[in-house]
Length: 468
Image 1 (cartoon, rainbow, N blue to C red):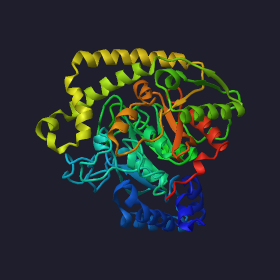
Image 2: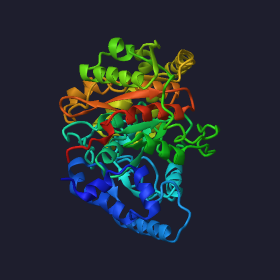
Image 3: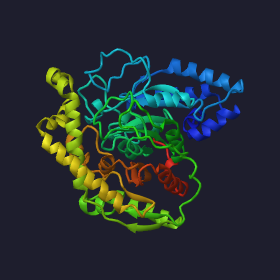
Image 4: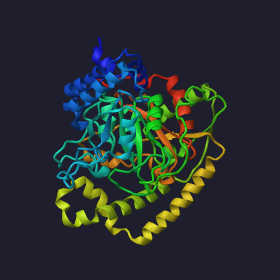
């Protein structure tokens, strides 16, 4: 028999927001249910670096008063959220899960995305764990332990937005902010069986977010359902002059097409990513095939498409990411190398050996790959492909991590900037989540949500709960 508090914690935020508006759910009760789950289970998962229970309950009480007073409510009124700890929150330090920033003073202001969530009525519940500066892997030589997967704590929850993914999947919070430079919103979404959107480059402001790679960084929403994800993107999308990469493109209502169905839509599938470029494990490949059958059964027209090989995207992304990351960390690496984790150093130091010529060549190749990809999908409504080639690996096995961490198909869409969403499409025999990606033309996130909502509505993967 399920605990009533657990049932409340696992409400979709769309459901919870509706109940709060009618007075049938107290924001205080809602927030307390999540704090209870965090208290009971996060000692096993370490998804949060800092939980703001007292202030969250105070905010929830104010949210409840607003409902009773008949005040105008935001779309996320009374809904708790978490922030990956490279995202600024007023009054708190931003550690980036690193000793480099551990003694930094509290921030004076929220990052832009945090401001947007608060203005929409969201309640800030706490800071979630990340990989060091959103680049290192699961590190055991830092003062804070790495987050673990709620489906199996011996498994990796995906990175670098690991805490956000684990917290959402575990019912600790219904929505969280992650960042994505080579797949770091979609990786934990994949590994934890939730929904993660990397919107078009420039669609969501990065102001107040610790940078990793200026030309590849994205900020994105992480939720348990497609409708929740669309609602969250509604709140955080928009032009911001404080972010040099921000796109001055009108924001649409990302929830508007969720119930339109997909009959007649033209969907491409990129099979060579997982059948030829890298060979996916059988369960992951079968889950994608089964998902395509569902989409065809809903009326979509599916055809296979060919892009550049996965290795071309991955290599180009890596050169750009490491060049820009090393430039950001060069001073600290010179002065305080001992304060970094071994995992971060192993990943970032190759950037020291890349030349300006390497970087320029990679940027030229990036343009070719981006142009080619967008030409390939110009007559399609969306494209489907795998996210990871494997289910989550063993978190404390460095050999397993070294083998499986690079086996993914997410980096191409950081490089091209196209919107890409990861969502669950099955579980393997060990009870670990499987996932796929849906990709579309620039600034057509609404189409991705339309396809994703249709698939989600025809399946029940999103209704499963981790065995906590």
